[in-house]
Length: 265
Image (cartoon, rainbow, N blue to C red; front, side, top):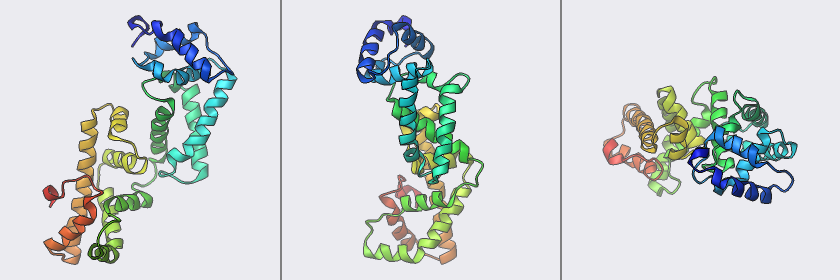
């Protein structure tokens, strides 16, 4: 929505609502109108008035607003990136990169926040994407990624017979999963990493890649199916497992892996 579409009519309400949340600083109607014109506010932006006022004030150099944003980043970024890299120095680096991108980019990324959702969720997606880009030079998938995928596949609620299979074949399962992940195209690995490690939803992934949620769902299902096919083939060839044994292993996966096992097997 642009100002000509009706944003002007809610700007006063946004200013008032924002002031109630941030009494330590204010933005003027003119400043907010300039921000709205350049950003194209969402239709329901009033629901996130406080976040819009914070963003606008930061872009206008208000120290108190910048301090509030800095606190939000430092408190939440370590949690956002911990499944990508648990190192505290990595989180600090991402905090610095994020702040630079938000406020000193060309144009500042914060100027693209439209109020379509909360600022915190918007920062979460931006942070995770930045962290993935930062880690992209490292070999993929990492051991943590493979372990996470294997745990994603294995149901902790499996019965005793299946737990025996898990105990016997667990290390081999992890190795097979790792090989399957390495064989995936880069985009599929990136999407799976965001989905499994960063816990992004298919809606968030769709917005990130500029596609419909059904497309990201297909990407994920295709990638998971490819990895599972690799695991299935290796277990049959290496261990000579009968179809019934492979089906038993599949039951370990059934509750966690969003694939139709009947179709795959």
